[in-house]
Image 1 (cartoon, rainbow, N blue to C red):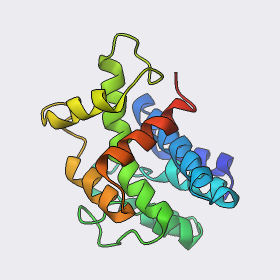
Image 2: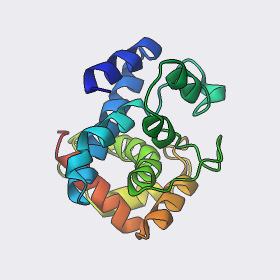
Image 3: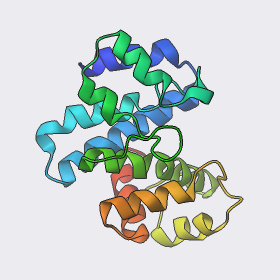
Image 4: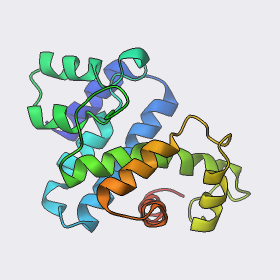
Length: 180
């Protein structure tokens, strides 16, 4: 599957600007981690998985991570993409992340949303001057970006064998490579 084909599929099921921006944010974050973790030869695959990870969320929020599998199977999309985008482990599906890429997706999906909310609260509205300390402060406030599951973020860090601080800092570093 090409990036263009993935984008076409994504926009067939998602029109909301917020969802499309989130998909691109996760795509670019996944591409960053592919390069950083020694999977540069799989960067396009990691990016497509990031782009499609919430394929079904806008139209089928109650069947998130379930409906997308059906849609992709009907389209004859590679099983590796279908499995890799099933990031709702212990939430909506029982497909446990196994590959490093799947663990990254699981960890950064919610975290990029939380970091994005922190950025919006900053005077600069930029990730470029964002610090780990700023994110941690907002992270501790359970009412802040309440839709971003801290439990999932922490479980993702554990799956990767990283500290929460390391996951947050590395994700900030990723966002700085493509966002203002």
